[in-house]
Length: 452
Image (cartoon, rainbow, N blue to C red):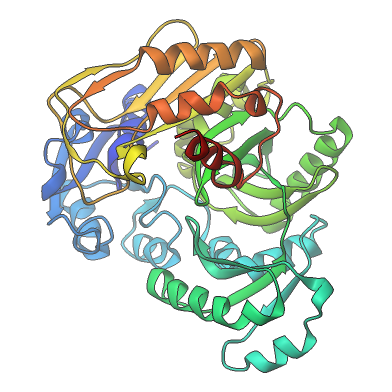
């Protein structure tokens, strides 16, 4: 087992990993930018190293600085959390070259899954259902346009190396296709360093369904029940729950079995998530995230497992423990992402000092956060400041617990989306499971604007 692990991240996920390390008796090293010197993860870690100024490129994305911090502190492994360098195969190779264990999957599989178009082809070969797609070359757009028919539309244009909702456009007809593809390519180049695109069928009312997996180096694989991540704003998840009760039991079992077989054939190990679109009758593979997900706590709650601990054990060369392999689902869980933003002014960022703070509590309520009273939320990073997770025996009980928890949560000094989330889960649409990936923009916000 490792004696010391460096956590190459910030915010609530850094706190989450540090706590898991403490419970395993492993020393932790936090890294931080100058803007994060007062963050909770810095205070909780056994050691902390400042790696640069606030721009991510000069701190949390600076591979030389992070490797130097690991070497100086004699950390044997690095946990990347999610975001930043968590899916960067170059960083993994650098870790390996310096004799540092990367707590994640092997670079070989990470490279295969990093390109979404290639990942879909691989999964298709492994028997996982995928959305039919068209590859698009911006250097020769006329060829793609020539093959497109009116009945093919609407089409979804996506960045091959995309994520976080960037590099995505919807073309409703042929006349607007090229202009939107050019915009997607430019956005993709700026965000991911590649203008490569692919095109696939666009679903009008899809749900976003994903399956959490974890595997060890001995061929043991655990596939967990699905998470429904359909409630999003601008392609960013805001409320997630597990399981999706309307998913056909037979379809669930077939997909979970297929995923298990695919993971074994890939030689994949550590944590990962396979994301699907669901049209009401079939699940279509979209992409695989070769890392821990923001919404992992809801899976942990219904299975009573610790996925971060399992990640660390697998990276240390151990088999998946029996407490994980034998875990069974119980109840329903929902996660609410609390962001430092102001919904009343177009969801503009709301950094600043937290003057007062009260988190909800009680049975079945979990808080993952790095903030505290007196903490100043910096303006430079992702707006996520807390996750409120509720767990109950039934979905209805979980929703009521969520309403209670969000109502109890109090914060002063900055604005958050708390009330916005509270209004969503009190709608009939949410209770009756009539939401889809664009529900917030196309229905909920339109309805709210009409009432003003």
